[in-house]
Image (cartoon, rainbow, N blue to C red; front, side):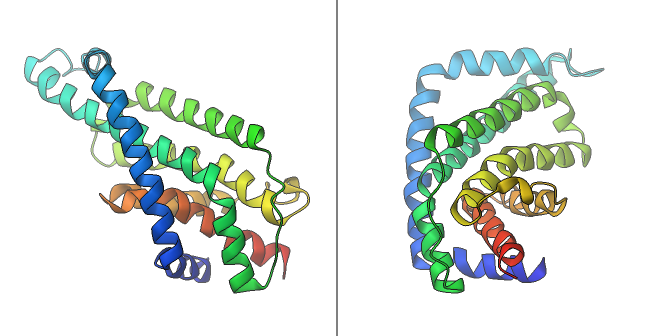
Length: 220
């Protein structure tokens, strides 16, 4: 796993990957800026109502005012990550095929189906957003909140990322879905989300890590 991490870190510093990240992140921020400009009042009101239900302290005015703002930022941050993940999923195949050919001499082939990829992304994003809203009060609890958030980010990345990568390099993805180390890859990639600016690297870093992880098993 250490070798996979080191290879992935090296890849994300290459000009082609950095250029890809720049385009995807700018697109995501543009889309979400328009969304929040139109719906911010309704969005912040929803978050405020959730903060008010935090056990024991939610009824305090200071918690509702400061907590609502912080909660809105947390959910908004999560939504931006969702959009970056979806755009990365849709536009990364050519980049991954290029990296695989360069590093492994493997041509690969794009067997992914856009509809199936979108379904995986919508499913993972819906689960992520629903759980994020449900667990929002717990995110304010030190340590526990960070652990929950890490798991949620891993859920967002795991299934759609695995499908996107496996469709490029293996015939039957089901032969590899049972490995528990898939979760380790998703969790490690999700750690990027804790670092401002570097969070935009998380989705493509997850894809590159899955590529190295999968090719190390499929082409031993």
